[in-house]
Length: 70
Figure 1: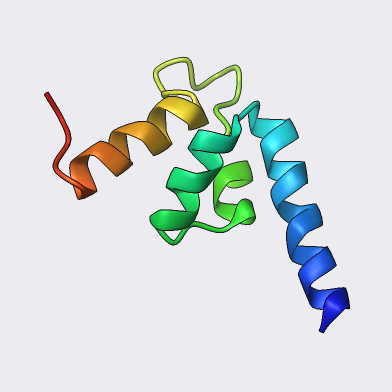
Figure 2 (figure 1 turned 45 degrees about the vertical axis):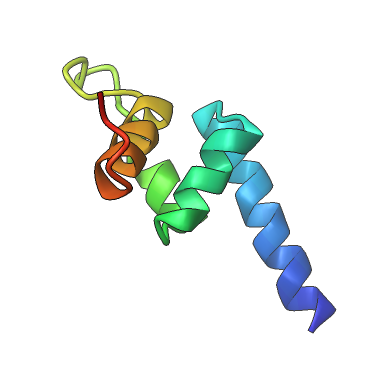
């Protein structure tokens, strides 16, 4: 059981580093049911300048889901 937990924690740490997220954004992503793989897959490439950063994307989805948009 501890091996699975360690692997999950390592995946979240990797996503946090690659996507440049803070603890609050990670919490929001978990509340939305996202996985670390989902976050990493949505990192915009240099040819996708129109795409929002992962942090902005997660915050926007969280605001829409929980009706906190201004």
